[in-house]
Image 1: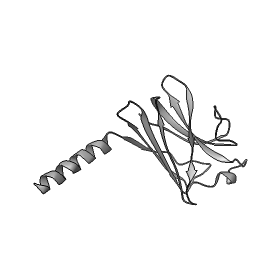
Image 2: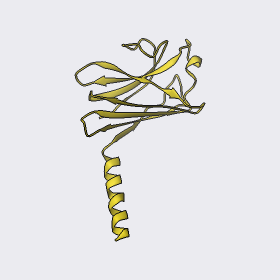
Image 3: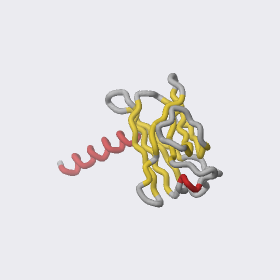
Amino acid sequence: MKTLRNTSLLIIALFLLSCATSKKFPVSSIAPAADISASKKKDNHNNYVVAITAKNLASVDRVAPSKSTYVVWILTDNEGIKNLGQLSIRNARTSKLKSLTPFDFSEIFITAEEQGNVTYPQGLEITRVNIK
């Protein structure tokens, strides 16, 4: 009985993981050492949970010209470009963002900006990926 329960839990976990779409960003010419990935998953309330993980992303003040923050953007299907938030740099090797949005979207991109609360990308684009 215990084996059946464990197998059932494993199947459910695999199903839930398979519902998320994950993509790796292409190598950036501006930050070539960065290994960036994104996942997109629809929740029970028809919102989208977006998680970005960037490993080995150069400090934003090293981008030329120097900026103060990395901002993650989505290109929505009906509402245009939306600011999803700033990458939180936890240590020198990992930056993360987890966000919730009501908008369906087809692209995610990252820019280096002077401020995180900008409403339209003005800074240097670091990388971009299509995600369905």
